[in-house]
Image 1 (cartoon, one colour):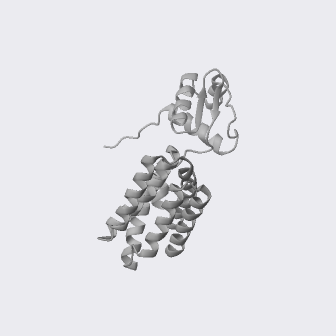
Image 2 (cartoon, one colour):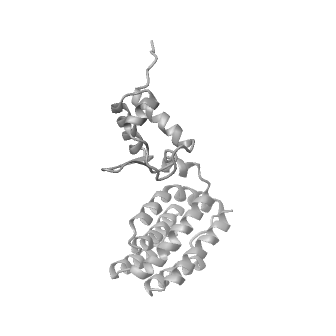
Image 3 (cartoon, one colour):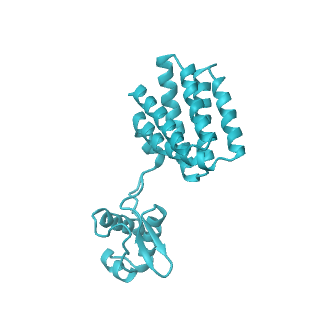
Length: 222
């Protein structure tokens, strides 16, 4: 027979603190009162308050700074990234790509190395020869764009790009199956132009080429 499970006090205290943060009692970056103040307010001991704070720190809401106290880092628990992407429509994903890749292209034009140039050219050639199947083409196209993001030498932008890839791949494959046309000469020339602006160290043009390409993709998907 199933039994009623009692929620640990620390879990309850963490939820009470989170409710107060959500309600606006403390603002972003504000320092929380000390344990001696919070404990009687929550009706628990100081050790339970410490555990509740540790839980919320692990969830990205609070941060403990040695010798300074506990500070609010977020006004709610950040939602799981995969859950956000599963719920997002493809237009939202493309708009996120525009933000990420247009900046990455500009940075790549400034920072690209000889090794990056070789990788971009290799990915561009693979993309040109990828019309054997829709899946192959989508993967080759993604690899090309990723090579440019890698050349930006910004790990955060690369992490964001990689996070979008599974959701984008699914949508692109579905779209191309409906359209049944992909990998044409004009599309490849657009990608060659983007590669050239990065290789020739033209950050403004690189950002523009990336933005325009993705804008056209967004319109095609709308």
